[in-house]
Image (cartoon, rainbow, N blue to C red; front, side, top):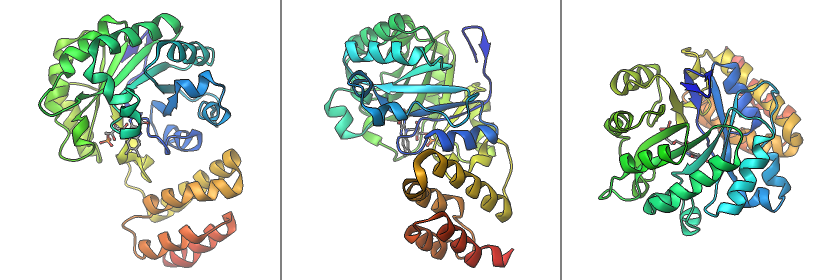
Length: 309
Ligand SMILES: Cc1cc2nc3c(=O)[nH]c(=O)nc-3n(C[C@H](O)[C@H](O)[C@H](O)COP(=O)(O)O)c2cc1C
């Protein structure tokens, strides 16, 4: 896509709460992602100067092409967040209007905004006005299966000033069940003039080719398909040696970013994903879950995997 004169074309790392921290985003950039998104960041958290929230804005690769995703439903904190983040000069600020989690929906945030298009319009317009970088909106096909309002919603976001939009073509009530309906991406693309980023159920290179062919969108955003698999961005099927090498590099970045204790805790889930499907992977996962230091993790990998290479 071309966004305010800048061309960004290819595969994007989707925003994922608890996953797309600075170390993981760096790994994905190193493997070919052309744009990465932060975890969803609470506008209110920034507004009230919460330090944990602010840390989500940091980078481990200073030249990372980075998008920041914010969520909220009130104009004042959302405008504050847009101004604050603009000063960091990200490629874009994305507004989360798709999160299905009950805690978020109860606060009228995330996908709840799809139930009130006027409110979503006002919020987006206010954020566009407050920001000096482009604004995008990420949303679903609708809040409920029997009210697929994504076309009307996308048009409203365009007229509110969004520079691009991303559709995850499931409804809120589906959460992650069933299939993403890529035909919704086609209909949305036909209805608006701003770039549409395709998302949903892309796990393999064949899926990337298929979604591009079916929707006509070259820019594809990948979430679950990247877990333990940054090679999705570079069309490579990794060897066991490559998995070990990148996992260790990821672990070093994590430790640098979070310290050894928290870094190793974070790497537990990544370890399960990186080594999934390998011989003895369940045993290795269980061992890594008990590891507390970098040396413990290295010992686990050596005792289970490296002796087999
Ligand atoms: C663990 C996890 C966390 C997620 N967190 C966010 C988030 O913070 N913001 C958001 O817009 N979407 C979030 N999503 C949704 C993804 O960005 C994406 O839209 C969805 O998973 C569909 O893409 P996929 O089929 O490639 O996984 C999350 C998904 C997962 C699996």
